[in-house]
Length: 197
View 1 (cartoon, rainbow, N blue to C red):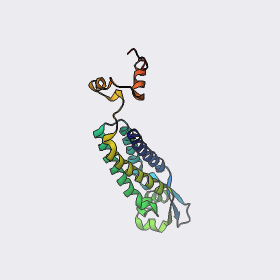
View 2 (tube, rainbow, N blue to C red):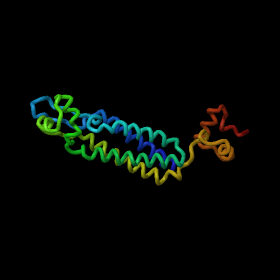
View 3 (tube, rainbow, N blue to C red):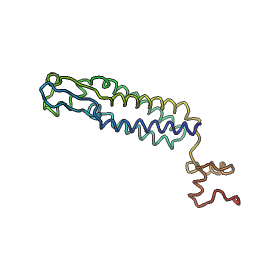
């Protein structure tokens, strides 16, 4: 059960980070122009500049969580919780029609106009796609996973023998080998099934 807890936490972090990175390249809003110009597609990275960096950070936290010790697990969980809160707060305003400030860079690049008054004259309507909602669901999953890690991390089993100190390895060497220990024995050229040992 606790081995599954580690895997669940790691996979949730990795999934949220991966979806965040993918969503940063997808269209989050479509802007219809009032000047009869072609409609604009605004990607997640443009509409929410912190999306890709925070998603990469979540991915890195997920990778670190897979090998972290008890203290680091709690640190990673707190960081993951903070990232989920930041991402949720940044995504909530974009779920409906995105505010003008969020789409302004794309409109300015397409039209050459700047200033809120000028942009309001050019923008007829802003339509959100499903990507902000998908991203929001991932951030909620990330927050739940971070809370789950905080609650259960202390009871997770330790890593394989390669992560133990020499004294710990000697202490654990008297009991039966699990699957990870058996692979480690094979990696060192020792047959774990050899009863003569």
